[in-house]
Length: 521
Image 1 (cartoon, rainbow, N blue to C red):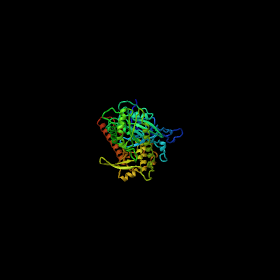
Image 2 (cartoon, rainbow, N blue to C red):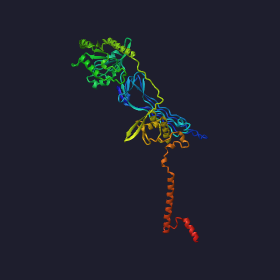
Image 3 (cartoon, rainbow, N blue to C red):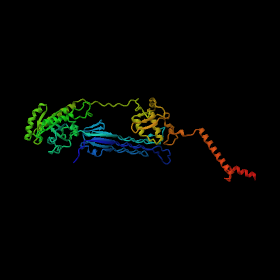
């Protein structure tokens, strides 16, 4: 038996972008072939798409972790990496996508509606794409950017025009089976219906959808029974039909009491207003409602229906005496539902159009980043936030000095250094780029930008990042040379003293000793 799941937490991640390639063309008789490293491919996206053949979120309940494929690495000879494949996840019509804190990201209604829930990462550029007049043969490439990752909550809200509500075993499943071609499970025990059932009804020229909601009991809006989980399936309905059991075998129940209990639960249920738009959502107990007194084919049921009908009409309800078994009164009920649905559709068509979304390009003088001054361990800290700086940091290979120098040039060109000066940063200040997994720098504003300083240096190096502090000065070199001379002279003196003492038979200054022996002869 298939299980119905209408609420899951989905962990999605887009594919990572492939790294760019560092390569130099090597061909016989062409020593200066130039860079030919290809670009990395983009990572695949994760897309939620409405599919009419999907009716439950069960597959994501069993496998909640979904990841799109990564982009391939770039290769030499200008071979670019292939892009990762897009991962399309089918969802039922009426699925609402939310963050874990309840913020609505998308309301997917209609066949083919889709939402990119996790974008793939951008592929890195190879050294061929990074070459320029001043940087003719880059010794580095850009890394691929990781894909987006997030946890989203998927909630299914059934798409139906009319909802049938009532106590367990009130005959809602039998009614929907009589009005439409739907064939839900029907039995004579409570809570037979465990999932919402949909059926399509044709009344004259109007075609609409009805849904029966699993039986409600007192306390359903607080989580008792099945109603708390399934009341959200009536949030999209234009009208409600109270199906009241007029032939209940329980002595403490009657149709009016059942109606009051269900109305109280509908009023206590908090409708989700987060995706409703500017007009909001009408509470369940304020929507058009009809009353269907069911099971009038039973003698006791007909007597009960005739007894309670005047009181229900006095309260303002439109009452219909029906039998889901004999089909008595179903035509009148279906046309009454069609009348309400037609009015709701007319009001929706005449409603003002939603406000236009105006897309404005970024201003010319907009920096594209912000600098926030913070404090850590009683020391100032400057945090750089912005889409470009954070992406550039992810693309940088910090094991390659030339790549780090290229990042410095990009940040300086963007204006980060000037803004740090204005924010009060001084040499040696701690600068952080990004929020999570941020990169920390000890800022050195004296570093000169410009690829023209790289001429004649090995690939992958940058003179601006060389550690000149370890090189000895001229006076230090003189002192080291003098120390070496003194050490040699001390060693000779020690050996000569040992020779005179008879320890050695050969003088430490053997050339001078041999000359003296020749003179003696």
